[in-house]
Length: 159
Image (cartoon, rainbow, N blue to C red; front, side, top):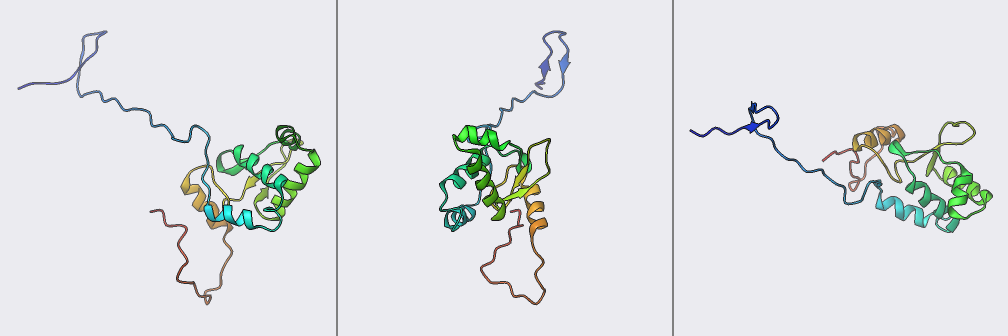
């Protein structure tokens, strides 16, 4: 009867079991990525204010590119303006529009800088479990006698 095992080459000790090599799983998207909804992208493009403002879309795309886990954003507006070669006032207007339209959610001040969160309806960077919890928090209460249309899908189905 054959016995298989592993030998520690340093000590000569026979180790029970077998070593298995498991490769590192790599994301096809690189190290920086987030999830987005196609419906939300269409909604933004059709928005009468956001969709017609190239500077607002540029700021939105930049912020999405810099999003941190759980959708937190803490980037000075001056830095955004410098990176996008825009005036500070234009960045301020764009952020104001994104806040008014519900795309961004105001966060606490960090020193002298503002912070925001991307509304999870428009994208998410983090665990799917936490996304579903955030969506539940943001749902409005619907009276029991309100009918649900047949084409409504359950956004919390984890399948």
